[in-house]
Image (cartoon, rainbow, N blue to C red):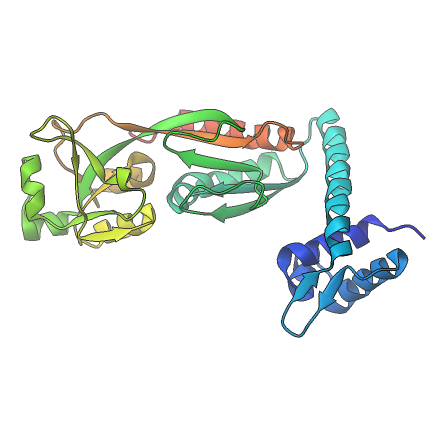
Length: 300
C-alpha cells in the first residue's frame, strides 16, 4: 500500500513543529488522528521515522532521508496546484511573510483587510523578526527588508523608500527643552539601537562634516520599542517615516532640526528566491503592497 499525501503532510508537520500536539493544531486534526496517521505511514514503510521520548521527537537516519523526499513531493504538489490556480488567475494557498515588527504593524497589517477581500484564497502567515533571516531555514516565502541588501541569491523588488528623522514627544521637549544644534544632543536622553550600529548614525552633519553618530542612553533591537519609548517621553529618537506618519500628523511626535536634517532614506525591498514555485502568490501580494503605498506615501 502506497503512502498518501495526508500521511506525508502529517510527518512533515510533526518534524517542523517538533511535536504531535503542535502538528495536530496546524493540521486541524486531533492528536490521536495525527499519531495514527504517522503510525500508519511507518507501518507502510516498514521502518521507524521518528524516535519518540517523553520530552521530544528525533528523526532516525531513515527519517532524515525520507523527510527530504517527502518535502520534494509536497513541494511538487504545491507547484502543480499553483500552476492550475494561475491558469484560473486566482492565487491560492499559503504565503509566509516576514518583516521587522514596525513594518509589519504599521504597513502590512493595515493592508490585510483589503488584500484578503481581493484574494480570499491566499492564506497568509505573518512572522516578525528584527534581524535578517534565512528564508529557507525559516520557511519564508517573501520578506520585506529595510536598508541595503547583501544577499545576491535573492530576487529583490523595490517597493519604496522611507526617510529617517529625529523626533521627540511634546512632553519630553517641555521638560528638557528643544535642541537647536546637533552639538546639544549630548545634553539629552537619546534612544537608539543596540544593533546594527549603523542605525545610530543620525541624519545630521556634525562638526567634522560626517553624519552624527550617537551613543544611546537606552538601546533596543526593535524600532517599535524605540517608538514607544519616544511616545512615552523618554528621549529623542531617530525613526523611519513609515512607522511615525500618524504620530507626526497628530503631534504625538515632533520632528527636530527640520532645516538641518539630511534627506536620508532607507530603501525597502521585497525579497524572495528566484526559483520559487509561489510566484503568483508573491506577485499578487507585493503588487498589492506597492499599489497601496503609492497612494499613501510615508512622508506626507
